[in-house]
Length: 453
Ligand code: FE
Image 1 (spheres, rainbow, N blue to C red):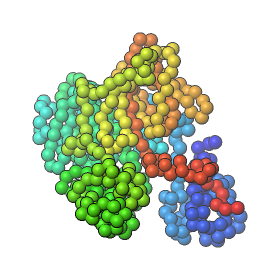
Image 2: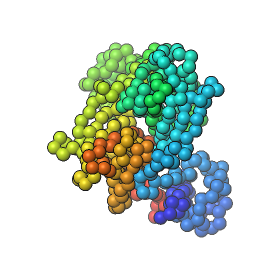
Image 3: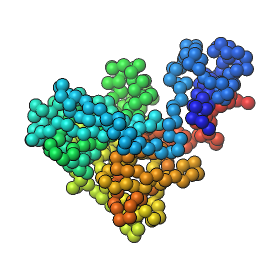
Image 4: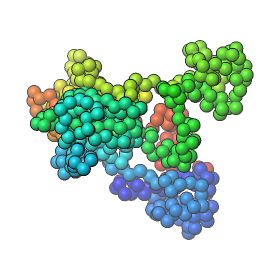
């Protein structure tokens, strides 16, 4: 199917799903949307396009947003989207800070399917110390997107958290993962050696619907919904209190339901104490939720970042010691984002060796590091595809598409960077899709008919 036809079909499916949700049959929908008799089904099935005018009208007469009717673009019809080094180089532009050239930016592989904004960046500012207050360092104000950074060459990394500035000298293979809106900067420690980073920014579930919903709800509500995990504002038991609010449950009622002494129930609800494993079971049963819903995530960030130096990074072979195809090295990440994984892959498999496909539920970005080309094999829609990627080439891979790497040259050891992230399909969504009634999945991704008859 042509990408354009597919877009039209998915737009039609969203229109049908919206009408179903609002309990409108075709006749009602046609009357309210000012459509000719018999045409709604044609729009909904993709036979006729859903025009801007039709979306505007629907958003006017029905309680929904234009955005609810807009499908995403599929710019990855082959499962993998490659961006060549040449194309990256052509996108290069120098950005000045404080009136002087500071960075050269180049785009690498991006897709409309995932929230990656991965840039290759060369440091143009050279410093001779690792002083975070060096006046040559130009700081940004931080940005919304999460940033995973992989370092190539003698790069100084600067970050600021709660007003305190830090500088860490980094080198090839070092990496860092950082939280949104923390100011940061990068410089080079050498006027002759290349000093670059791969700045792989991404929004994950912070972008899209959540951001739009919170923008409408406003500052005060957003602050009230935020759950700090450390610092002065941290108070344990946030989710216990949320579920108590949701169910209008008092401490007395919580004590009654759990069988805990009222003082203890009060401590757990107020955040003065943390529940033990047995109490978690009691609380979950009492509140009608799962234990996981009551547990906060863990973070190992210090001053907003997780640093991982190459010298202390964990490394192992895959799939097994007997016939390893890759040496994997674990790069920076944090338990706060369990669905983000960064790996450095040293490819041990030679050109003619059996392929060792890697599959993940995540969106996947890859960049060819070093000087050696790598053969990329993948399987999509029943077809096997292979491409040779040169150093500096990058690619985006759809979730669940198996990819395998092999050295393009006998005896070579190519190196690839992988950054895997989740998008809007959180575990909540995966559980929800997995518990639909029979036939539900097909209808969820492309509802094209009335919900009855
Ligand atoms: Fe940044």
